[in-house]
Structure formats: structure tokens, C-alpha cells
Image 1 (cartoon, rainbow, N blue to C red):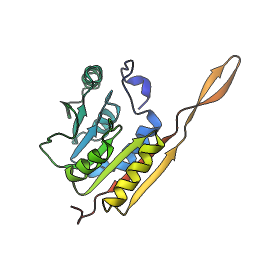
Image 2 (cartoon, helix red, strand yellow):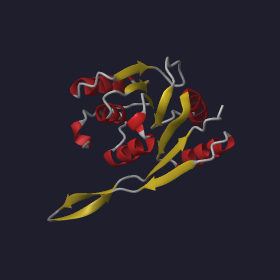
Image 3 (cartoon, rainbow, N blue to C red):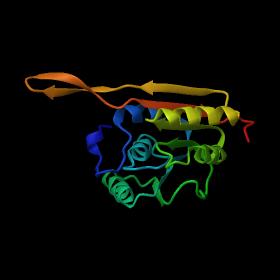
Image 4 (cartoon, one colour):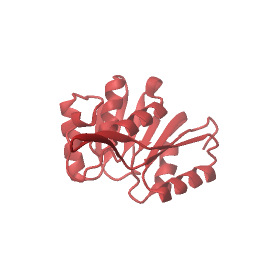
Length: 189
């Protein structure tokens, strides 16, 4: 989905189109029943996942009041009845185990959220995280290793978009984004 389809607000984060496409691919939602989106922001990941997978139940967790308003507006705009918005700060109680968890931000509680996400996941479930800070990348990779996760996929995504400049065009670079994906093994506690 194009980024400009989503209602946007000042200082409300949104996972951009190219990153969202890679993250959704890594979540492997084709057979998933429940996705948890931590720090849903505008709802771009939740909504695109819900539209691509109409039987998927999505729990979109968000703490920012401005983001909660945009998230609700975007859900109405796209008629996403399978997205349940939860106001609060993760980790928090979620009624149902998940087949996939997406984390677009950690609010400074990265290790705690990784542990919580792994507990929320059913065996075989997928955890996908995106970061722009290298420190968060290294912290997450180290914590996953210490948690016994052996199959971890990590990619750096660099995207540039064709942009007009005077009478010509150039490729305007976006911030590089790190994408980590892993699968909870059957025997992982």
C-alpha cells in the first residue's frame, strides 16, 4: 500500500512502504490467526496485514494519544474490523497467544519487550522488529542470542525515492532501517 493512503499526523511514527512490505513478508502471515503490533503508530502495519489477511485478528498496541486517534481513524477509513486497538504500554496482558509479533519501536524497553513477545508467541510463531538505531540493533541481536534464538535473520534496508529537483530528478535517500526476523522454536520456553 502506498504511504499516502494513510492519514498522517505530526510526530506519529509510521512504518514506511518498503519497510512494511519486507516486515509483512518476514511475518509470514498467510497461515497466522493472530498478530500483535507493538507501538502501532498510524496503524500502517496492522491495517495492511488485516487487509491482506481478512481472517487475521490484529491487536494493535499504542500508548500515544495522538497516534491512537490516527490509528482509529485509519481503521475506520480502511474498514478494518479485524483490528483491535489496545491503549496502553507493552508489555501488557493480551488475551490470546499470537502467531506473529511486530515491533516497530521499543520505547526504551527493548529487552523486556523481546522477552514478552517470545512469551506471547505460539511455537513456530514469528517475531519481526525494525530499528533505525544501531544500538538497538546490537542490543536486540545480543538479547535474542542470549535467549537461545538460533535462527535469526537480519537485513539492512536502504531505500531512495525518485524526487524532483529543479528541472531534474534525483534519488532522495531515506534513513536506513534494520529488520530482524526470527521464529520461536517448538521447544523455546
